[in-house]
Structures are given as structure tokens and as C-alpha cells.
Image (cartoon, rainbow, N blue to C red; front, top):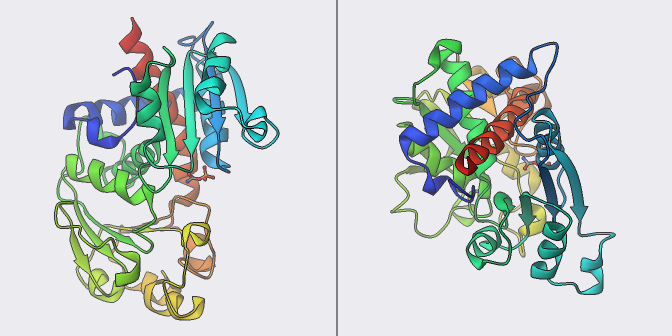
Length: 313
Ligand code: CP
């Protein structure tokens, strides 16, 4: 594995190996000395053409924990605002020593295009491309599910038999796309719950079932309810009548929380719109994995950098 672009590229064996490496990295994070020397002398460049808190900072933390040097380029304040092309920007970073490019971009397919372009020799990691994919989010989510449902004894296991409901803005969600691919590879069953306006027209090839009400999806007693952010910035027109109506029909409310079976969890990739797709009481409840997802995200990104480094040796 030279690049990390899509969860579509991962076999079941590779996916489980990444989950197990994430577990190892979480152990490292729990030690007094939280560092490994794996990337000493290497540079990880975070190139973010879209806003981010979790992904950017956790890649920085992951690279530092593996003893890499880190540089970060945000499009605002850089020469991108003067019209510098992506190719020239990335070649500039590589000329300064970047061995890994962690790339977030508003346009779908950019990470794959860069990886295949031959512009640079560096490893390319997709940190979210438009509405297409967010593969490290899916990895940290799958790890969080495995740890919560099966505990530390889950090493070597997939997610066979786990029932996952993904609810909300599927149409605009790269998190949903990467998660669906990885969850299927790991043996989970996935139900998408969304109003028609937020569901892609044809999901027949996605290996999922659909539900046109969240309440029907919850009646099937899922192990996991993955709530998605309403992406107002990617919406060109009204996809639902009002926020209060969306919350009433599609929000993970306190009442819906009480209907979940023992052990079931509620996830959100962040950033959350509290009171819209998830109630504050739900986000802060013991069933919520929101902060665990963030914590596991550092370990998952360490696992990806570590695995790509293995590909080099
Ligand atoms: N979940 C996620 O990608 O969050 P950020 O946009 O803050 O990185």
C-alpha cells in the first residue's frame, strides 16, 4: 500500500490488520512515553484546502507520535490564494522534504488524481475529498465500533453480524461512503435512514438496505446508530422543510436514545450540529462515542502512517 485513498481498496485482511495496528497505537498512546521512532527523519505535510479541526490536528498528533517532522499548509494564507496550482503546491512541499502528503480538498477525486499523477513521489493520504470519501474517518469509526461492541479481546476480528444504522445527510457524506465500504468488508450490515432528498438516487449497488423513517430503522434493534452532520455548506437548496422538522423525524433525540437496546452506541464524526441531527443529551450520554472517536482517530492515523511506512521498507 503506497497511498491511502479509499476504503474500497482494502481487503478484509488488510482492514483487520489496520484495526489491530490501531489497537497497538492506542496502547502506545497510553504509555508514559507516547512515541515511536518509526518516522524519524521523515516529514508529514498536512495540506488542507478545506476547514478541519479533528482530522488536521489528529494527523499532526499522529505524525509527531511517530517522531516525524510536521508541516501544515492551509489554503487560506498560502500562495494558493494567488492562483498557485495544486501540482505546483505539492511539488513545492515535496521539494522541502515532504514524504507524506495528507490532503483534504473540496473536490471529489482529488486525492486519487494526485496519487496517480506522477507529480510527486510522496505517499498520499486522503483526508476527505468533497462528497467522495474520508477513509481514515471510516477506519477510526470501525475501530470504535469493534472496541465498544467486543472489547480489547476483539483483536483479529471483523464486525460480523453488527447492525449499523447510518442516519442523515447520506447524499453529501464522504464519511458515509467510506464507512459503508469498510463496514461491508468487515461483515457488518448497514441500513441507511434518510429523507429521499438526502439519499442518493440509486444505492442499489451499495450493499445496504434503506429505511424511509428513522423509527423503523431503530425498531430493528441496531448495535450502532451513526448520525451524520447536516452539511449546510454543500446544500444548494432546501432539502427539508425546517430544522425543527428534520430534528423531529431524523434527529437522534433523547426519546429515541431510550429505545436503543443494551450496549448499543451512538456515533457522530463531528463537527456536530447539536439540537439538529443529535440532541445535546444524546451527544453527552454514556452511549455516545463522540470523544472516543476523536481519541481513536489519532491512533488510527498513526496506524495508517505506520502501515504506509512498512510499504516502503
Ligand atoms: N470528522 C471530521 O472530518 O472532522 P473535521 O472536519 O473537524 O476534520
